Image (tube, rainbow, N blue to C red; front, side):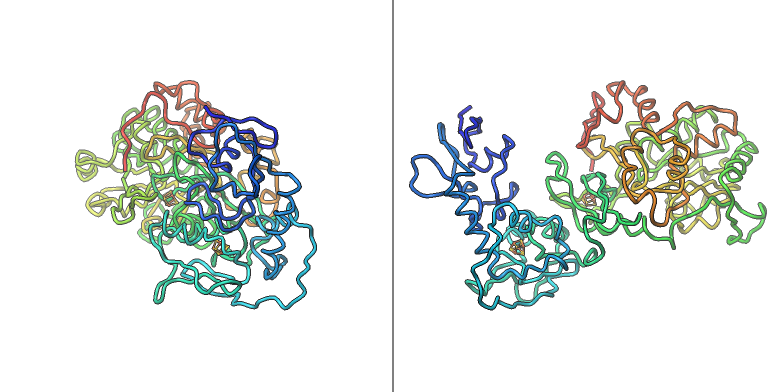
Length: 560
Ligand code: SF4
Ligand code: SF4
């Protein structure tokens, strides 16, 4: 491989790479605003100017190809002088309104002002005034005064979202960004411009002015919006999710998320009006009054569920798994169905919408874990199961995270059902008819794993605390993964929902039925389930890492 020397460090580079790419690959950060690794080079911000031996003038590192034997300096006197000048130029008309800017605390311009600016301006004229509140589209606001004209947002729309909706207008210090006449910044990926904007010019209408970023906690997660499983970071304040941002994973989602995933995977988690916030049982078993569910404590609900299950023969009970739930929860349900009720009366209902899929990230399979269910050997609802359900032999449904009324032809078998036990997070069309409801924690509140369309196992971490986690803290019973998460105020402030992980509820019901499940935390469930799958034996949460791992020798064909 050819070699280049940057700041006296000799590094290898791939032919065709620019100086900035060679440096970044070797862990050498070269200042940049307009350069983005996923987009074309525009070379307009000039902050990446570097000195190259034998070249008379400074040159920009983002567009200059690295060549064999090239010697580059990024911290020489000339370079520092140029960086000072670029920062002074960029700040001439900048409003310096960091105290009211959402970006403050995570702003490249702010960071670079400390790092590369002399901290003094010679400009004592009136600054340009521009519009500070321009609605570019349904999700994005634009502050013209903060824009440094890097063109990242324009290039993103052209090159990544394939929707050229933004452009520069005017010239010189009047230059600004606009949508084309009659157009809005409204494409399925529009909100990515918020993070790639290196300043606070583009902000999220959803998140605007809700929190200073240093008052939030940030947790690595995975979007549950479709089978892509985009890597994300959940931002929380006072135990409420305020925003979701993309987390770089070049194997899955590059640097992006879709707007649907960002907006629709947080509302329900926060919504006290639709969350189930206590175990519930039906007050009068034979009552036809569907509203007669009362709140009870966990022990009462567990013993009620167990007594319902004991009343029936094993072959009268059907278990419904969920592609919205983790591997751990589905494994526990399969074990519960198999070991206690001896049989394989378990299925899940797929949820696909071809109109949702596209060629960028979004997949038609709008569940995050259907490949996880395949890995566990849980089958989709098919004609055979439907016939069994409709035959009237099945009297009890034990359901994980599914709206029973949405199952195809549900009216034709629900009339035979005498008892329904639900483990769900949200009220749904059917929940008022249930006999027992257990509130199950959402993806944002648990440790767990999903398997995406590529068969990549990816990790969820608890970003929001539940009463259960608070109880475990009190009893010093946290798993090592919970301990890692219990480092900030979300564990002590804010409303907490009274929910538990699905596997834990199943373990508790199993115990009352006389069966001991040996796992004590989600990682132990994962280790146990992996031990039964060829190729995954010996996997634990460390094996998965932060960007996921393809499922061993079990690699199945990619799905939608
Ligand atoms: S709005 Fe942001 S991303 Fe777009 S050109 Fe201005 S500074 Fe760059
Ligand atoms: S593409 Fe799918 S996984 Fe990615 S953000 Fe959108 S809904 Fe979520």
